[in-house]
Image (tube, rainbow, N blue to C red; front, side):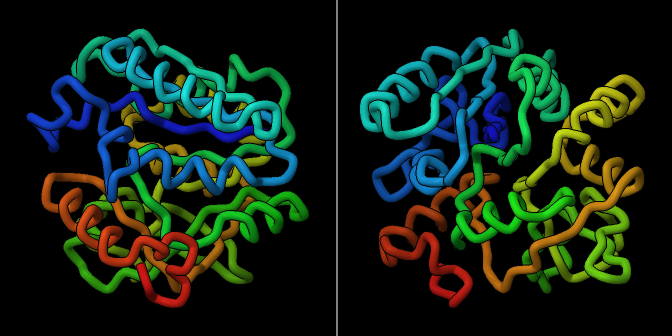
Length: 262
């Protein structure tokens, strides 16, 4: 079992903060954004390796971060594997789907994967979702309630069918088809790997990972974890400041979001 952290973007909406420094390593409540995800990941049962993909510009930043985490984990945790996708600027980036394919190709055989964007802080526990995914037979996404139409237009919005199945995922829709958002947190079975290769080879837009999830939903069975929780998306400077202020005010909020503290 593996996890994949997508950290190869250039964070242009946060310039100048991210002109020479990666967004996932910006400090939120005195800890890098990514640390808020790494701590729960490191404790997941059956997780053999965490693969992080970044670009050539920020590779050294993530190498220092990786080395520090390896020291912390010692022999107790999963291996941390760093991938350089070779891009040097926003104009020649591979896009999230291209980066995910790169990792899937290099990681060899795996029995299941957790895929997450490196610029989100999830205010709920990952462990019960991971365990349910390991026991189940389907791909899973996470769906969180969202009533603000403007926010829905800036994210992936799932379309639900009978029995909890996800029929489609509308990426940044002008007219949102539901009042749920699907952050970049996915649980994928091995059958996703060839479908991702098909998608990347034929898709006109493979930047946001939600485009692949929409393709996956249309090709096979995908279900959702519907949680009454929230996430903090470090999308722009205002969101970054809000996340920092919130976690400074409620430092134990991570993992308690289902009860509304985050």
